[in-house]
Amino acid sequence: MPKKNQEVKWRDSEAKKLLQQDLISGDIPLDSSTLAPQEVYLQRTAFADFGEYDKFPARLRGLRSQITDKNNRGASDSIALAHDRRIFPKPTHNGRGEPRWEGSDAERLLKLDIDEGKHKTMQPKELHQSRGEFQNYKLKVFREHIYQEEKRRKFLASFKKA
Image 1 (cartoon, one colour):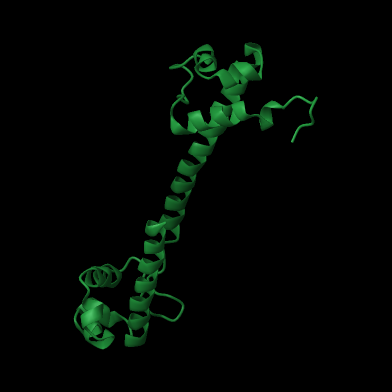
Image 2: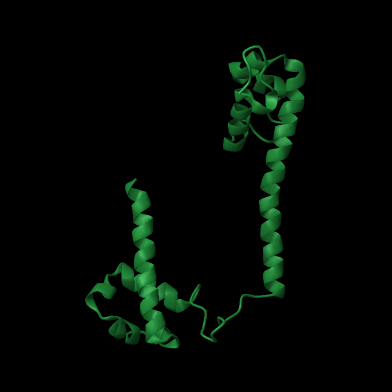
């Protein structure tokens, strides 16, 4: 917090926060060719209240660059992960030699069965025997996946209530 007689610096200013929010939300385009700095400067009084226009174009250019770089990092991370997955694909089995549950047909089908409420009308053993895809997993492991999915749904539902 600045002292009474001390000026607020740009990096801590409300004007900078507003400009970042506008750039991230798309209210101000990241492409400098579509909206000139002077037009951006005139959009909010907070920019004019903060200081003279002469420093604003460089500040806007810097924020545009930072946000663009951050967005590009996500894309480059995705490309790098895809590259690594081609070289080192996800293992088909876990450390105990069992087929991976994550992404399996069994996982997808169990979620459908839970959507239909079958887990409430059938015992885990009956549900386990109802589909061939479930047979790749031991009953104990399958039962735990039922409970895990119920827990996950309760957890997600708690966010919807709030």
